[in-house]
Amino acid sequence: MKRQHSTLGPLCPRSRRTLAAALAANLAVAASLLCGGTAAFGATAALHISGKPPVSSTAGGAYVFRPSVSGLPAGRTLKFSIVHKPVWAQFNGSTGALWGVPNSVGTFSDIVISVSDGISAAALPAFAVKVSADPVRISGRPAQSVTAGARYSFRPAASDSAGRALSYSVWHKPAWASFSIATGELSGTPKSSQTGTYAGIVISASDGKARAWLAPFTIRVSAAKTALTPSANASAVNALMLAEKHPGDVGLESDPAVVHYENFAQPSVAAVVARYESYVNAAGMALVADHPANSPSTRAMRFTAGGKHPATDLYKSFGAGYDELYFRYYIKYEGSGPWHHSGLWFGGYNPPLPWPDPHAGERPLGNDRYSIGLEPISTFAHTPMDFYVYWRGMHSWMAEPSGKDAYYGNTLLHDAQFLPQSDTWVCYEIHLKLNPDPADGSGAVLELWKDNELVRTFDESGPFGFWVRDKFCPTGADDSACTVYRPKNPDWVRLDQRWRTTAALKINYFWPQNYNTSSANSSLLLADMVVARQRVGCTVRK
Image (cartoon, rainbow, N blue to C red; front, side, top):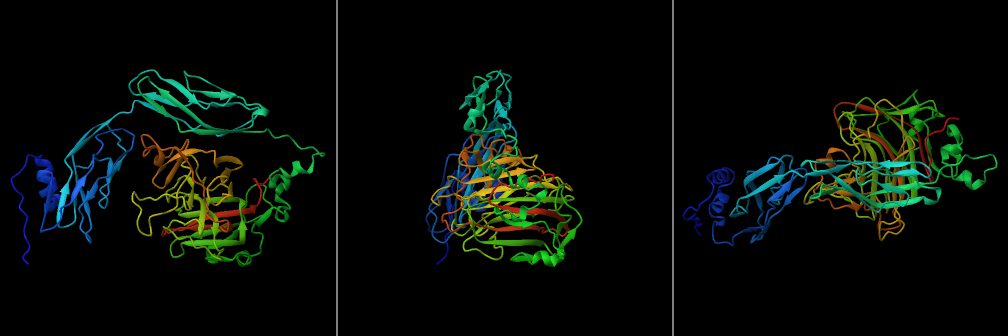
């Protein structure tokens, strides 16, 4: 049968600039743009596109719009196009989604989103987005902990582009704290009887017409430590960190709370790798005469990777595994990389495996696996450190997840000052307590210390944060991923820590590594690695 040809009909009033751009981008769609309707080639049901794009936004806020399409015949694929896309926006040709964070004020006009299945096409009427300034801004990183008897103080930074005076408010103020409506300062000294967790604290600034809020945050008040005397009882001794019980780490390896201990005291690389279930690239490992201060060992292990040998690692299985563990290790990043997955990973497989099987790009189901890594988050020099996490509650880097590469490790800290400190020994400790009830995430804890200073605690009390695709931005997050792309009105949530949906999934492996896919080699040193069932702490001087 001879194929019929469409007729465009008489021209309708339309911006010539919009029409010319559409003709250049998609001839079939241009027919639809002429009259805001549908061009159909052949006897077939016509496409229809609909939706009301937001016509206003604020600089620094999120703009998101996705149209709806109907009338698609079976077996055809949609392709979306756009003309006059704002410079600050991104566009998905598969879904028609338009999104971004405006970085300047002004009006962005004659935007047209269209769709075609190769036979017929349709377009939305041209629209404009007016971007205005957000007059009130507030920022700051409140401390998350304080010791009873010590003073706590936090004062946010705020501004008003209209020049109006600001006043401040607070919700869920701790009973031991005072608050200034003139400066926004929250301060006070908790007593020993006021230890505990104070969650959901929110500070806002207002100019009388507009208001901005900090993310809800939590302050944990801990009891002050008391010095132990020779008559201290056994329970007090057991409350010490393991490193305090074993100054210089002497005898630490034999402590009943220790699951795995590695100070690279073996005579050769071959003797080291023999202690592990699997390893990669022993030729990239070297025992070197370098070690952290106070270390009982005189050596560390250098892991070199890159070029033809991108992976150098050790893998230790703990068999059936544990529900809660602490991982303390010392690391020195030599030079500035390049890095990829360079640091410590651990997690769980169900059933346990004698080798790593990370399933890059795939989200775990909850009954099969999860993994947690701490590493530099990019190959660039002086890049921050962050968690790199796979679990059932992870988010995708895609607006519409699809395929087998829709999920890569989620980052959780986003602290621009949390840097790897090249050529310096640093002590890190990570604590993971899996959710006791597989039905929900309550009771789970993820914590991180650097040189014995608490960096972040994630538990059921907080912190609150918001998601930017695959990035969780907790209270105080200050890198560009969480500041430049912060939504105007974030959906503040706690991190979903339902690591597992079955009690059979445990913490059962330990995986120190340097994985570097660059053609240039990079090296890092590891030393004094301890896995234990209670807090370890950094090595104490003997």
